[in-house]
Amino acid sequence: MKGLYALAVSFLMCTVVDGARADENDAHRFFERIQHRYETITDYQCRIDTYCTNGRSKEHRILNFYFKRPRLIRVDLLWGNMPFDNGSVGVFTGGNTITGHRGGILSGIVMTIPRKSPMATTLRGEAFDEIDMEAVLDKLYFYIRNGSVRVMEESRFYRIVCVPFDASKNGGITKDIAQFDRDTLTITGFQRYEAEILVQEAIWTDYIINAGLPDSLFDVKFDPKSLKREGIPLLRQNL
Image (tube, rainbow, N blue to C red; front, top):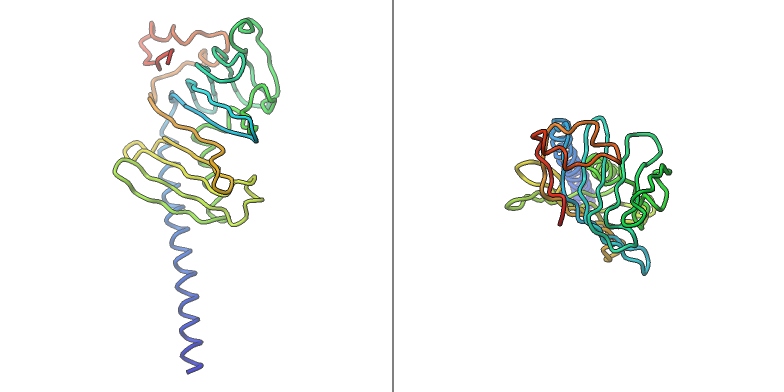
């Protein structure tokens, strides 16, 4: 009986380990599919609706997001609940700085500031280059060796639920939920939790992919509306 018990325990342990490896391998293969899709994209535009909270403070913003390889990023803030949010523009072209201006009466003052300056980040300290598709993939890859990953296929989406083994190694985040469009494999939603509290959410819509965005767009003084005259498809410039 002892031998049978030991054999059963050994079999159970092997099954659990093999199952964990299978989940890890499945998640890794799925992330590689997303990575491959991302590598086919030269440029993209999308609307992002973002929300985050830090203690009692809450931040809600709606923005037009522009990306071009190797990693040029422009954010046009259409609406936000913070002072001088509306009309703000920021541009990231690499390195450790952001160039931009605030909205309203401050729109004429162009500044170059550290990319991690509170003026250029969310309430939770995320910079421009930490909200694009590449940054989301980096967050998900963390879980391959440092947490559990479940990939669920739904009617129009893939939903990925990630839980870290140790939240202290994940900035206190206890769960990430990402959503990707089944057809395009583009990110459409991302939620972050501390315990059971939603502390961050982003929703991506209105993708325009490989439209041929020029480098000139990634100048804070450039007016995106002028691209229409060149026949380049463009996001709506208002809500």
